[in-house]
Image (tube, rainbow, N blue to C red; front, side, top):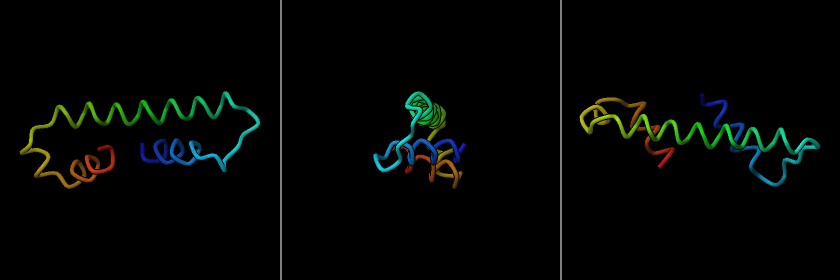
Length: 64
């Protein structure tokens, strides 16, 4: 999942140009959907679960 997020981040910058703009657009959509999906999962977790889970806290900082 981290790879998908990283690819979306990298391909969203202007210095990365592709001949196939459709591929770039699809990667950006996957990246955005991944972030939305992670936000939905984090919203379902209680504050106690977030406090007890290091990975959830780290992910919350990334997607916030």
